Image (cartoon, rainbow, N blue to C red; front, side, top):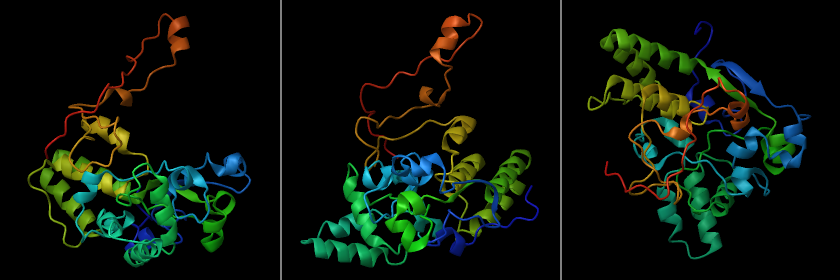
Length: 300
């Protein structure tokens, strides 16, 4: 499946205008929004991918930007990404929150943000409004991975121009990580070699984590490389992992800071209740029950 495809370069990955919105030689399968699609033309494009994932908007549009329901990378996962790994530039470092806390005026705040984000965003003022619209008001963990299309026009007219983008569904990078994992389950040494070769294209100083299992090393690469592309739930179930959202410094909202030792019930698909009620031969997964309180903080 990898034949004829090449991995995304740093320049392609982090491009301010075409990052993860324009097909390239890494993309094997994608979906593409058209300007006439109902989820672009109706309700200010709020049902589109861009509304959920893109934040560099100069107006108040989008759930992520205007409504404050922005998606962030997990704070602990971000901490584990070395500064030498250029994929870290997709996410805003919590250090910015410490800097803006010292600002005395709006002008000072805007200058601090603009200076700090000059290398990663051409529209730093939009990041400020995104952070301020969110419940926490924080900058840390905000994602710049998925960029608006259409250049300046897309940022100022997001719902009809900026959200008209392509979205990757399958990239050759996923194939390489599948290959490394599969090889490692037969011959761990060979899998490690493949995984290290992959990782060094993202971080020339990458070192294999000998304190974790081989598959955990693969999982970490998948979490970072494929963030926001739809693999988290399936990987957690395949690796039979728990989730950790309650810990010191977490950026998960209060009331949802749950830790589990295994795959949480809410990741199990349930058949609609009316089917079970009228089809006596149909069995179902138990209805997930929401925890009544946050879990005690985990100590890493």
